[in-house]
Image (cartoon, rainbow, N blue to C red; front, top):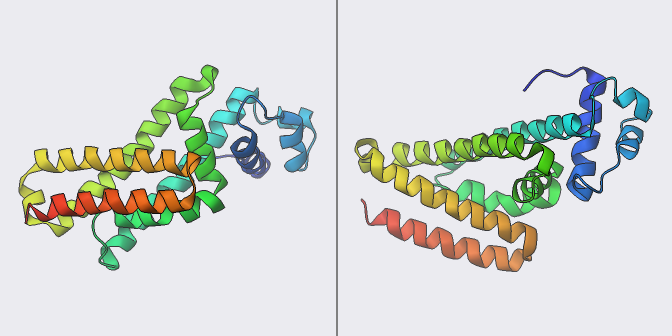
Length: 197
């Protein structure tokens, strides 16, 4: 992610919140500029068009969320939570409070056509970070995971399936449904992992 000037960063922050609420198509560069405390013409000094602003805002949101993912896996290790639980248990509160996460999920599931390739490539890197954190969690807790890379990969893919499913739940279901499904999916994951001990 390239460094931004303070005013370009301010535009990006305003854009993240605006795009998270309105999406790409219904968003207004004029409103984003006003939220950033400038005129629309000044916005173009930082971003050549809506696509460029959207991609920069999305990249910024992903970087912020990648830091949250890393912190969740680090905290999971110190709090002795089961592998993968730390991230899953914090998702509902973060989704409610984080424009970054709402923008990421809205965009990942319905990317704007003109920037789809950029969005999907960036989102895949974000998911790779989640996958890597989960693999590290397995390796740090289970002796078998240090020896059996193939099995770790299978569990990592299954965990990404859990995360993907729960992302959908955040967007379309209420928190009660999310909690029930998260608990069920984590129980199946835990039961499966316990068979390997």
